[in-house]
Image (tube, rainbow, N blue to C red; front, side):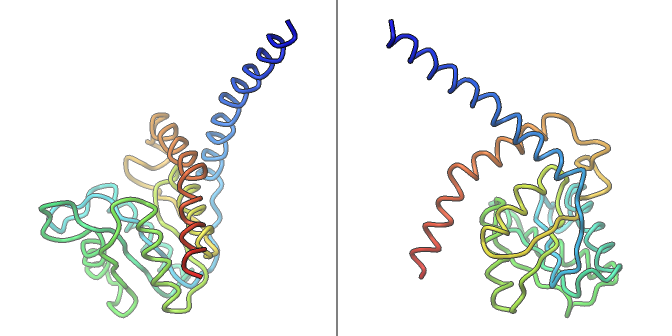
Length: 208
């Protein structure tokens, strides 16, 4: 009888955790999206999104518009574009982003394109490595609102001081993003903090 009581308590605790943790993380993701604060930094990073033969998708264009706005306001003197190409692509997300910025008045000397990363973690590792080479310490990440928390957490884990400037236009802006995107990002953040973060720390330890 005592064993059943203990087992019931254990199961209840597990169920409680299984409900509370995702709900807490969902709230945290929502809060980060709605309460972003951009700080003066060394560099702006535009995380990649789809492009079509050099033409940024609407999601990527929204990020580029926001990056230019933040750059023009003087929050950072440099922009890094990041993102690889899909199989069969003639160019990359990073190159497409750089071309768009050049065509909208940003000088080439202020832009670095890193054609790496088909996911947030690899993209983050790539631009953080470039930041370290240039002696940069702080970054403004330009991405979708519900992506801000995960993107900033990864950057912070790799030693950067990050803030996020979420897009204000497009399908992924707060005016249009749906609950599905919020839930998806909540799951992705949980997956990172429970599994991906350990891989980063292990890699850092092996590099020492």
